[in-house]
Length: 290
Ligand SMILES: Nc1ncnc2c1ncn2[C@@H]1O[C@H](COP(=O)(O)OP(=O)(O)OP(=O)(O)O)[C@@H](O)[C@H]1O
Ligand SMILES: [Mg+2]
View 1 (cartoon, rainbow, N blue to C red):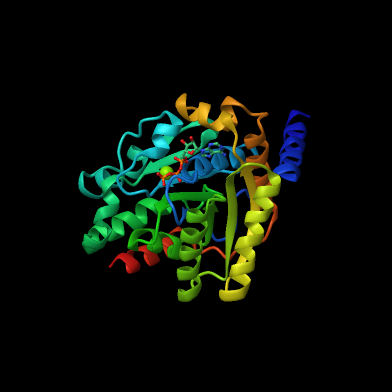
View 2 (tube, helix red, strand yellow):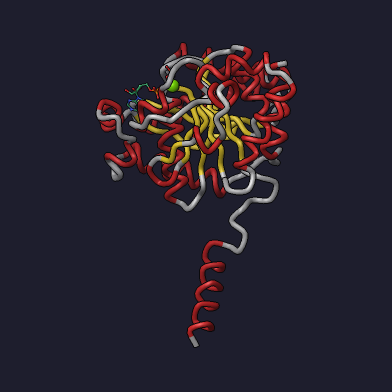
């Protein structure tokens, strides 16, 4: 009887969450970037990770913003090591992962990312083996790439399966963000790019901003823009940053939290690109750095 009951429970759980939690081919690897700095990338990555975790997704954040340890500051956590220690100090992937709220796992690239062009074959293999750890136990890898058109940012955006570009309505953000999408379009790496408008004064301004970006992109670029959602300027975000707590945890009912949950749902239910798998991603990244 007990045996049957436990079998039923397993069946019910499977019906709810699906028998295989692992997406075929590995996690969706998404690079988050922007033309201009300070538009809200790191806040977006951290809170999106938590929103996805809230929807039963297993998420890893990779901080690939060279030199700036912003993700850990926002999460209020201190990782026990970075990719540098993994590559040069004999640490394993388990040694450098830290688990935050919602079981979101976090890896800091640290100065290890500066070394990607200088690795010998053994180190390259070690990196591939280490990051392949996430192949079967992760639904999303979110990469905070930093801003601007640098080799590093372009390598991460090209190696990822999907790219999200964050804009604000400011003219400088529009021109710089357009610049980065133009480069992606030119190199024909992605057929579409996700768009987020952050810090608009209201929904109307967010819609106008999306309209402006779509108009120029449709006219001049060979790339589809997929608007994933907008987050208006919300003082609870500023307050949460000061308290080193992600806004979705500090103020779960705020407008910003509702928007990020909607974006997470759009990501899960919307169109997705084919995944390369962790091995494919790291292989491409090393090729681009090499
Ligand atoms: N929706 C929002 N409403 C109000 N303020 C916001 C919002 N999003 C971000 N901010 C403010 O913008 C600041 C910068 O955000 P964040 O650090 O996430 O940007 P970033 O793009 O990662 O910056 P960098 O390019 O320097 O890495 C935050 O500290 C916060 O004060
Ligand atoms: Mg940042």
